[in-house]
Length: 278
Image (cartoon, rainbow, N blue to C red):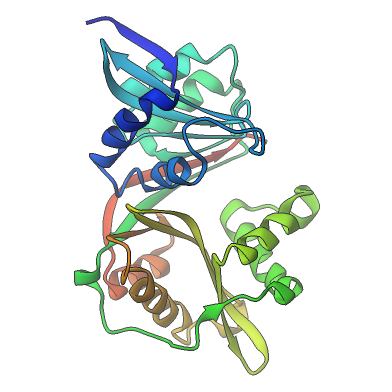
């Protein structure tokens, strides 16, 4: 059967959902993007597109492209199919950031990145279902309030500094607005002790298939006190009351966070890679 690459449209929605649903844990970020924004942008949405590799009429791999490459996310694969899509888009996509399964992101870097990425990190994708959860909770974890933006910002900046090695507030003119939007969307949870916010976690992506947690951050002076374990357990238990699964990316070298995730009940999956080119 002939292999083709084409931009996906509304008629391909069911095929894309079926493809991603074959491995929902490793495609959870894409499933969230698809459910929240749809397969094609409307006038009120920023530019983005989904591209697919077809064997005849069968969709075998997919790629999300934000703008002209601001964020590129491949479907879970060994990278072979992703490379076909990336090669087809080489003239129109300038890779700035990508995240996904390591072989697939490796393929994107080879085809769409002219130089060495500014940052490249490998992660292990952890996932959990309600049946796997341990007995860790902290009922004091709560949604951040809109009037707490200036209190949440230092934690959000700290999480980006440790994850992406950059000063988000000075390098990204839209960073504060995105933090505010997450709070308004009820996707940021915080723990407050003695009038100080000491822990933060965000819901990065959410759909009927599950949610991906990101931006876990404990202020340095409060580390080693169990906040991350108890709060991860708390938000996991809360979300899994209505969702089938959660995922969490843990940097390969972060043994402390991996131990916390396993303690709460998360199981390690396949390797992920994050690259930032600019």
